Length: 127
Image 1: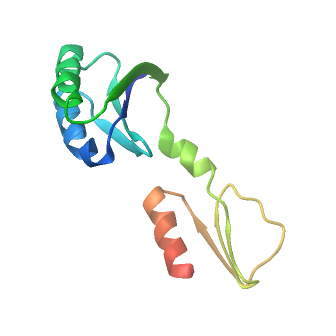
Image 2 (image 1 turned 135 degrees about the horizontal axis):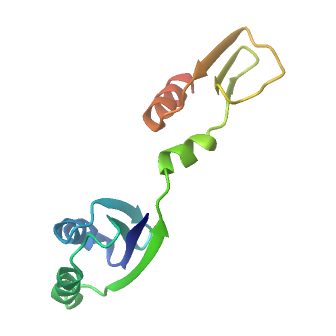
Image 3 (image 1 turned 60 degrees about the vertical axis):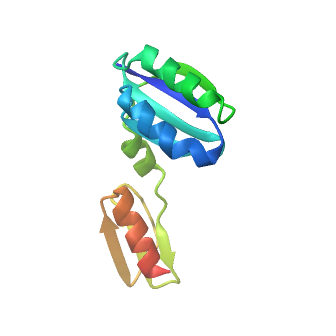
């Protein structure tokens, strides 16, 4: 299984309107980048003709570049979770995922199952 990725290079003030228009063409996941955004559609479930008409519609207002390729389906949340680092609060407390192996003992140890919002929330509260 794969996704079609549409990389859009545009003036950043046009990103939101372009995302909304491209969503109408069948792309359902978006990620902002420094130069615009990336849009993803499952397989070939998008309207290529509509994407081209969107490009033509806005190319006179803003310089636009569209690049389309295929990327393998991946569980991005799982990939992100693998990169979660343990949090050490002085020598008193350790916040870690079950898969972290720490030899040192701490007065307090919090074991979590990482999920993106949970780890961010805990980090903000501890710092």
